[in-house]
Length: 521
Image (cartoon, rainbow, N blue to C red; front, top):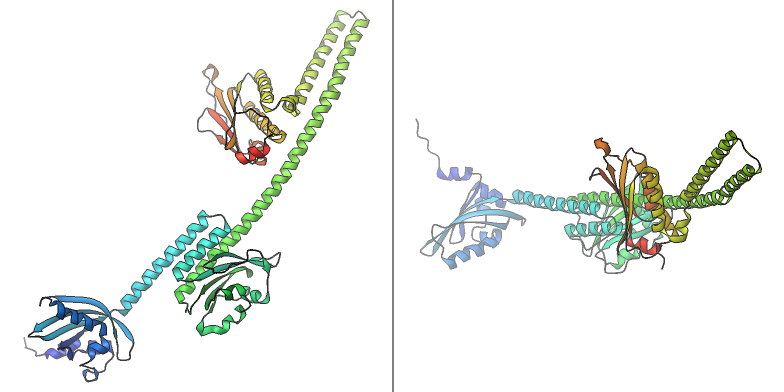
């Protein structure tokens, strides 16, 4: 094997990491990697005596601290600092070094490498994580807040926090009225109008921007059309980002984010603004859909209320006709039959026929009275809900064999007619549901008037007679449609619980405000 001689300096120049040797603060050697790092073509061009002052000024103080602290000779140190290259541009450097004190003749060995790219990646990763946290917080607010103003304010607060912006606001377009309004404004120093206002030419220009517009010191001409937007100008905004909110090329609004100093928007900030704009648009569209749904639901409730009111009036009319007209006619017919019976001596066969006619008339008269009562019980008008329910339950129990009980809590006053009729119909429909199934039920009805709400509980338990297993009935949504409709008109809710089989519970709750509005003084 041959011995190959390689100069030691040549080895140092081939090392890809910068090496700098200093004696009494003056550079005595720098390899190729170090010269390249600081931007010098050769060591002759490197300012040996002033290297620390020019290229590593922040590191010079570190060396001075070593001299004052008198570190141990074996101590190696590692720091991250900022240097300057030959062109005066800043560079981020990692320094691994050792200082030797030789009779106050300080020798220093520095191993340096550029960590600018690494630091940039770390900063970008940190910014990315922060951006994802912002997006997550915005998505959370969309899921957990229903009020549009709250959603927009929360989103803009998160956006300003991430961008370190001073102000943000959203413009919402009302296409039908051809107006716009401010919403979700944060960071404002002046009062923004809450009322809608007409779309001016300046706002029309903003709403129809083809994409995000960044108005900065380098693009001041873009701010020309903002001079007529008094709210923005009054905030002393120097830099503005405008992101149009558009659905199928139809303007729905725009997002404005501003700074009271000169700010240059980065590509990451522009990306985040687009992401947030999509969520703002979603919030606005959802709010509009929800408003349309609420309006339609109110119209439906109003229509249903009118329909049910008309039904009740028609029932009253039919019940009155049955009681006053048909009932009297049947009574008169029976009376005439009895008179006819007294005018002659009927045969045995004729007498039986007359008895049968009178029995049929009695049955028709009784059925007419029950039908009239079910259509509109007079006891409900005269004495109120509780007595009417007791009469109803007695009739159903007598006809079906059910055991039905009515219990009341704090029912010391009459309710308004609409509420009493609604609750009566709910109990009536509930009892009809149980009668659809075979078997005998034990039903407990409770009327509870508590401080915060009015509650109606109907518990029906199927009795197992003769040890014959029966399937517990289940009510479909169609079965309880009338009950739910009645409860909705009173501002209440309905819950049907099958979990405690064989007992079925129908619970109707009417909030206290509704109860208070519907109670007589």
